[in-house]
Length: 68
Figure 1 (cartoon, helix red, strand yellow):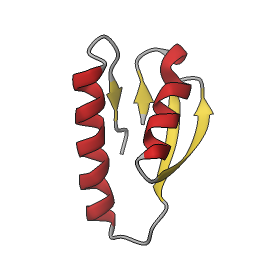
Figure 2 (tube, one colour):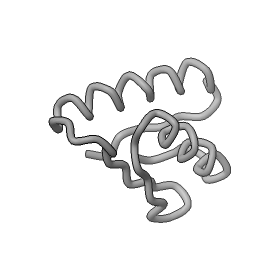
Figure 3 (tube, rainbow, N blue to C red):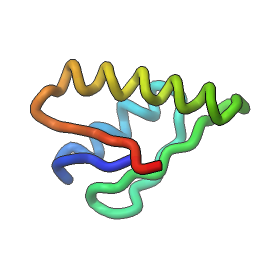
Figure 4 (cartoon, helix red, strand yellow):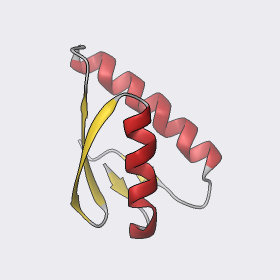
């Protein structure tokens, strides 16, 4: 995923990890995300989309988007 502002990357990582995903910062604006539990790719994507929609609602001034 990609963050609009590098200053929020660590906040996004902490949030996504609390939601049950593993993360790895690839650079200051790119985060690799993987589900911790064995779930289908479709299920993981649905959950991640939901959590990111919530993030966007709570943090309107910063955007987070999925790259693939």
